[in-house]
Length: 268
Ligand SMILES: NC(=O)c1ccc[n+]([C@@H]2O[C@H](COP(=O)([O-])OP(=O)(O)OC[C@H]3O[C@@H](n4cnc5c(N)ncnc54)[C@H](O)[C@@H]3O)[C@@H](O)[C@H]2O)c1
Ligand SMILES: *[C@@H]1O[C@H](CO)[C@@H](O)[C@H](O)[C@H]1NC(C)=O
Ligand SMILES: [Zn+2]
Image 1 (spheres, rainbow, N blue to C red):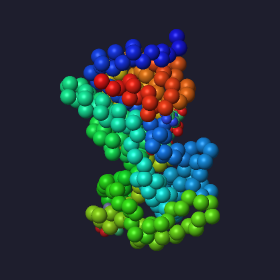
Image 2 (image 1 turned 45 degrees about the vertical axis):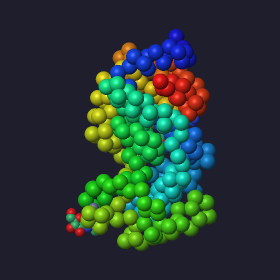
Image 3 (image 1 turned 180 degrees about the horizontal axis):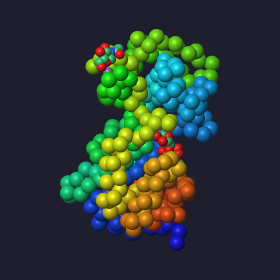
Image 4 (image 1 turned 120 degrees about the horizontal axis):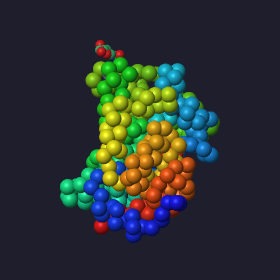
């Protein structure tokens, strides 16, 4: 049976649910104007994200990798949460009042869910606004703009922009030990945080309704999450501009921009 697009039926399930998990990907931030760094137009200078978002790239040229992340931070700071982020945050508040639980599990690193007011949030890929010390492993929240004086006006994305070659002493440093810090995101080739994975697994085991918003459902392990929930017989609804490889495994599919469809689904 193909997934249903019946919003009234889905809203009844939303009203009856006691523990809702909302999985989100890059698509939830698309209407905020956050670029994806994937596919066409996904380049920064002559690099694809996969070339810079690695520990090897950072060890080789921490200045270049910081320029890339500085650029991404500054771009996201000019963006605002959109109606999809806000609908999710308001839904959480409303259900909390009724003694029910809503948890967001996101692949996004832009923190727009945080800025929208979401409280129960698992960030599987970390955050652009956290740093991790290469020396003492301290993790710190950091919304400074620029993150350090040497990066001011650096990070221009044009192919002909010059590599700033900032000395390592002038890159972002740890408040605790003065060591070099790195962006607090999970890079290609790195494992997800064990605690986050365990926490996500528990929510997925216990939830009685699941929404999958703006993810292509191809990136492991998040790609398996919703199909696992569906296999347990729990209703899963996908909100996307198009069908994905996982669509046929879900009970509901709401096609269109999630800034429109989510407020319809989650409003009182
Ligand atoms: N905002 C961010 O933090 C950000 C942005 C880009 C990429 N990333 C990273 O890259 C990876 C991307 O995987 P992914 O599955 O999250 O994204 P993806 O780019 O693979 O897929 C995005 C999905 O969103 C859908 N979409 C686009 N606009 C939409 C809209 N307005 N409403 C509903 N759906 C919409 C697309 O059809 C697509 O299926 C992740 O690992 C993530 O960490 C993060
Ligand atoms: C690194 O950490 C050690 C203690 O763990 C400390 O003595 C040292 O000063 C730190 N600093 C740098 C710059 O690596
Ligand atoms: Zn440190």
